[in-house]
Length: 592
Image (tube, rainbow, N blue to C red):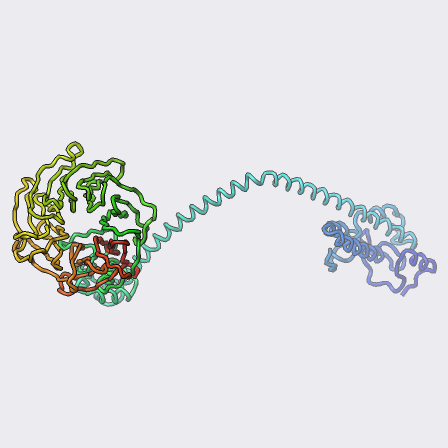
């Protein structure tokens, strides 16, 4: 080991250099190693640069954001960056541009490969100063870049509102387009799923399911309702297959109030047959929920009619129109229209050809257009008009004055009587045949003749009597045609009678007796098997299966001591409406 010269220790101490055994030689600023004892550009230069860099890194961290640029500008020594890991770079690269300036300032020492310690220290200080200047220059460039970024950011902020609006509009458009695409994709997936299930059905499973669907429909048509329900629980394909209307049509025609007439006409094609059969079971079992739609302060004798989603009901001398809510078991409280014109109570009214034809206790007939304010009222009878019917542009009316009259509905001939028929008894009910060739009257049966008589509509002549065994006083309070050759009647004798004009006019085909010997004020039918009647005591509504003699179910609708007759009944496949003296009741069979 070679000892340093005597003066070199003091100079090195003042310059902050270590004096002692020299470590492994480092490359100098010119790319070659110098003697370890001459203090040239070597170990001292790299160590000092490393200490200065560590100080700059610490200060840069305190300044929050400026340390990264300083660290890149002031790399040196044996470290390759901020990590402090050793790297292959030379001392010249570590010292930076300032080292070149120091080397140029001492060309003689560099050429000789060494020099005094003082001159070496001065070269190191100059190199450090040059490196610090390069760091400041890099810091300035970094600051300029940051300012440029801020200007660009401000410009983007200024243009952002319009761009945001555009992005929002585009987002909504994308959402709408996505919804349509998702719906289309769902439809395609359902089709593909049905095709896969059909293919799987053909490829696997019992041999029965590999038959054509026409044969499967024929086989399953012999199943009853319970068997079809169990079959639908096997798989999804069978569930869809057993929901076919063709399989349930036969069952629906045999059910109560399923929307099919006796001749098989479907009156509700928009509702799946399977759903109607489900509701019909509630009618058969008597499962329903009772509610009150309207109330009156004083006793009334209301009459009502249904048309689509509207209810028309008479209250005193007015006729009010209400709209049903979607559930069908409640009404909008505000009426759609009010039709007036009578001086006394409205006894009866019908809907025909967008007109309301009403009969009043003042002996007048009123004609109102439903969708306008047109109203015509004319005198028709000497006493109160108890009943009225209208079909095919013809009006027939019956009165307490023992006459029935025929009137035209044409606007230019309103009030012109076509025929006056002497019934010799008070007329309580009247109905026109669907063939528009005749009409039937129901009278009080105070004479020695049948209370049911059929008259020719064109000439006003008597055609026939119905029945021959009516007791005196067995007046007919309600009568209705079910088909051109069949009709139903009820009244004071507590019987409901079913007449078929093709078999006999002397005796009814079938009859049902009220169990409690009460007068039957009104009746209603579904056109097939269900029959509903309203009795005179305690607001009792009875349901009948016309294939049986006994009553199916009875619903007393008055819970107060006041007894009220059921004046009018109307029904749909889901609800039954009953008008009493003080309330309008509803029986909901869809949601019992």
